[in-house]
Length: 368
Ligand code: ZN
Image 1: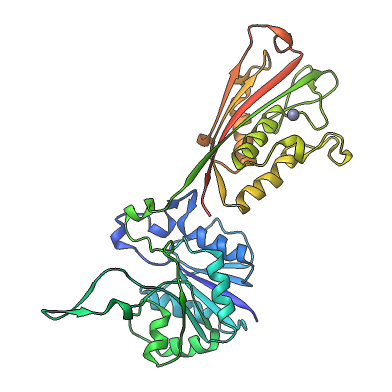
Image 2: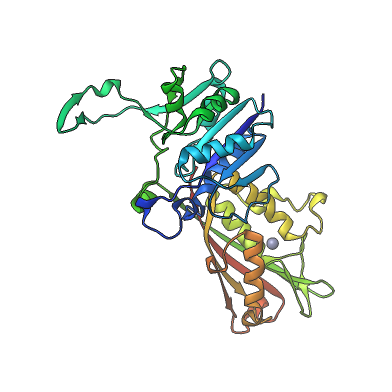
């Protein structure tokens, strides 16, 4: 069985009141539509992902993701995507509206499981509101117990959906409508309250994001005949930092800050100095598995503030370069990183240029 994930991101979103369509607005650290893409990838349920968009998307480099142009109406975009994949032999297709970025991977897996015995599986919610129904000027009571509010992702046997979709030329708001209109069976499963649709700007603030802070400190001795690395770049200097690794105090302090905020102990536990495997390791290579784990667990960095404590080199001279390097390594914008230089009035070992120290505070946001 092979699955395809179709993400409908071609809507104009008139109620959102912005020049930038809402699916491309920045939402919790990335473009809104990317939340759905990333979850589809992480679920490992899909051989291919199709994004239907009327705005060009350049940032996608993954070969399993295709961007195609959408239609004027939602149903036309959906039809275009189904046509695009009609010869690609997918057993099932999941269709999702980009305006719902907050579904869980668990929901995707539940939908997939139910597809084994059904040709259409659709998540729904009930309501607690007393409900009325208007017909022309008359308002009638409606029993809320009988109401189903459908969400996306919805998933279908590809052939069944394709055949129904081909014949449709009415404005439908979801694919479940097609199945019901044609008296085909749907398996309804419980949806998620958090999987709400983002329609207006105030919807962007509905989700609860947790903040965590971590502090990191590091110091290394300066020795002759070693290259000096700070923030991932080589700095011309009379000495370098002694250590098991390249001694990059900035990256080490940041790593400890990240681990602190994630409540995952410290750099020494992850990279014990008695392990030969880590001999002469470059610090960016120590950082990258930690960043992967950070992303996997649903955290992202909000900002990093750094104090580099040394007599020399002069921080002001290298600030730009170091911040640029860190922004590449951490995948952050430069304005999320601040680097301060602190001398120690020529006092102690640091004052005599025998050591360099660094402290960093990292703020993480958590959203899963
Ligand atoms: Zn260190």
